[in-house]
Length: 202
Image 1 (tube, one colour):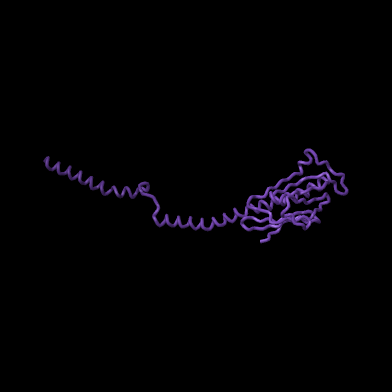
Image 2 (cartoon, rainbow, N blue to C red):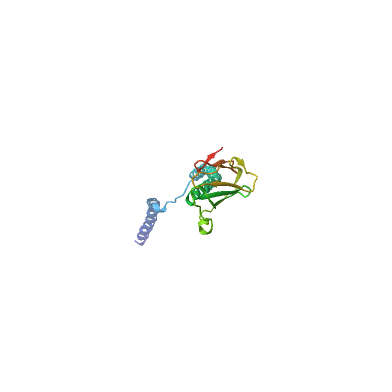
């Protein structure tokens, strides 16, 4: 009797172990949390390849944009300086000068006490004078190739001065600037209207 009970208990234990062993894989497969997640080698290679393609396309465009930045800045600043000189001449009713140092690459707008025809003039002293000042220092990557006032070159001079009048006219003025990346711009003033503009030379 005892022998039968021992055998049946032993069989029960064995059956339980076998049953649990059979259920274990099924329970793991049925639980998504137990799955191992990751990338295959092919997937990683595809991602790396896409990144390489994006960098190959994007970097040259970024470099070109960076190289064009200094010339855009210089063009904008010079146009602003010239238009400021014209506006200040009209507002003040006096001659306003643009002083250019071709060796130092600097541009300065300065009001004068010289009244133009039909104007009583204006004092150039104190805060009234300082409101008309405007200074530009060219970017280190951009230089002056030539500069003209009334069609005369001042490239090798230490100072070039062009004047703006209260009636909106101005002296002829042209400056040609070149960047290290090879961009060339011609910035000029129309003597009749006194307005500034620019042109690409390449």
